[in-house]
Image (cartoon, rainbow, N blue to C red; front, side):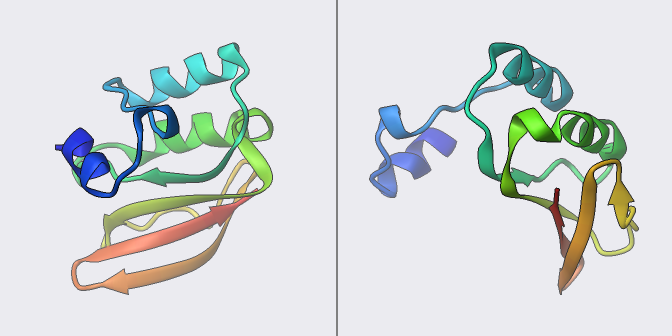
Length: 107
């Protein structure tokens, strides 16, 4: 479905990469491969998942994974209270939408 949506949005294969992997492991591999840092990371796990494990990896590797003004956006259930600070990440905003919420973190 993701690939179909990319095609509908006219995003070419050389402009995107779809990876099916456990998030923490993917982030560790990205750090080892020394990819260019990202401007935006959108993290939307199933609501029942433990968010902290992935956020800890993002935070501990923030200098390698995120640009200086990089943004991490985490979608979560509004009752799931995420930390305001996770290592190098600081929450700057919460946007509630029905039962969902978006937490915005910067370095």
